Length: 122
Ligand SMILES: [Zn+2]
Image (tube, rainbow, N blue to C red; front, side, top):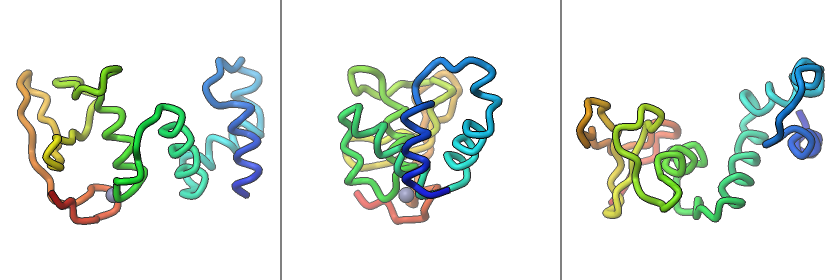
């Protein structure tokens, strides 16, 4: 899908309660497919979301990692521990880890981005 077309559909569909006749429409299906399968569309949508939240994603190797780190924080910007929806954490020292959901704050430190393979330096 052309990015410009995706942007138009995004404005129509994103962040809204959509009735079933809309979510079953061809336009919506094309939008959802592009969001999940088209990297340019996905990256644009994630960047828009992070921008609107005031999250500084520019220092991350890719938008996927930036988004997952953003999703790991609560409203105050603090790390959410033992939340099964959190799949990656970032510490202030620039370390990244995968949380082990065993009721404690156990993490497996990782050295490379799971999505783009970039070395995660300290
Ligand atoms: Zn990455």
